[in-house]
Image (cartoon, rainbow, N blue to C red):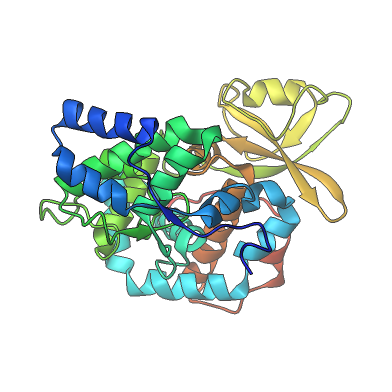
Length: 337
């Protein structure tokens, strides 16, 4: 059946390939890996065509905002998130104190990524990274680097490279960190000498918070807000590719009307929002941009923000039923704790 669909079966990595041999030699020379052991490990890696297929159809590219939103902003995901927050309140508060990131955003990231740690991925990380490093030319350079980081991580943190599982892209644990992020931003919150993103919730919470902190998160500042604008005046703004080159003042000078009352020099940018009734606009601020460093998609950042606000609303109101208001567009602002 797979052959009829044009999908071939998984196959072992071929050690005779020049690129595989070069990678092994570099790891041996640069990092002191044992060649025989590394050859055996690479021989066990399976190239998975289904992984390449998944890479070619990510949800962020295949769906408009209103389609993407209904996946993540659901009564069940909000209810599960509230229960998760309540169950881990003390650990979340400690992580928030240590990193300066509000609990609702830490929980929301976990809710979007893995449904609060329930779905951390079924692919072996070794297979995912080897497949994409050697059989996915479009992003081979990136995944070769991540394969390198994974091997270093498993050696340094005593993680079994043959059993570690994650997403089809090689992201690991409840927060779905790529190996480079795991090594750089992973936070040993319990002081036991290693970071466990699968089983240690305090490590998980602090690692997510640390990722945001290191990318410039500003506690208590807004992420995004609804906006209205004259289409002719904002024709120069794309709304789908953004950076921090614009400011509150420059957007308002171009006829964009929005709240909250940020300082004129604060970074701001337009966000295009595809709703069923047509194109709408939001303005994003620095904290929104920080979320896109976790996943470089405006859809992802909007989903994480809306989920965070819904969770905070319900935890603050003692878990009242989900109101209709959160199902539609509204102004979203991070309130001080």
